[in-house]
Length: 398
Image (cartoon, rainbow, N blue to C red; front, side):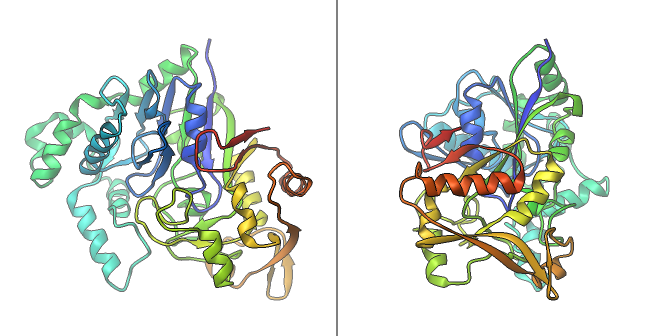
């Protein structure tokens, strides 16, 4: 009996805690697929022994035995970084082999030259806040139809012509992981297996719908994940959007609900080095933090067709003080608007219109419940999962 796949996407600017939600859902899944992005993204998972595991290219289902993990055709694969990531995960007791990790033969490879170009651009006057992972230049070559796909790994002579020794050796180690990912995914769905698709980055960074040019180089939406995995629209089931109650972002660009009070921002950000602090999993960069922006969130919900919200960092709202704020509209040129402008230039000029609500110490309090009801009424969809800490068990299922 054919099943339908569950999709998990970020609704803000990345770092919403998608890894935690996928980790929770993966326990009851048979297949976990990564459908976009590359080593420029990071999901942090807290293992059962309390140790943290930062995943950048490997799907978040890898920590469970007997789950098939697939790096889909929509990703950008850095062989050197992936080999390092595999070895790091193995050192923490995670079992990884060609039996539980598969790589699409048609995924595009990040070459050494791509990373060199990225480094040069970011160090010059045209920097865009990139992670310097070479993603933009890999995507550019893909669009120019000059890219190199993982299938070249099966041809050692050709492989040696396109990269340095480290790249060639790392790529060769991945040969046994290659597969026809679309065939594997379609077979899994047709045979009734539970399939979970995880997105990297988030809607606010989408190449089409994000605040261009302050975006990533891939399609981060549900539609992008469908294309990046080979799943058709009839096979889409549950669609879960992940949002942080205390949103954050890196990489430049407008951030309407940014907290401008430095003391509150520092409190919200937390202590660097802690698993729930607001510093990039890939770069270590300090993130800008803000209040929950329901205007932007509604647009993300509409475009992605979100069925339900997983709201993370619910326990961190009290870092704002005695009250917290939610952006319920914007003001642009003196006019109040309820939908975000598509232009980054216009968005910079927007001022948030806030609704202020009391914070709480008890996550089951009436104040906490009223906060959730306000969000649900505004977005017209339920909040079904609530993150109240970094560990696996720190999740309330409604």
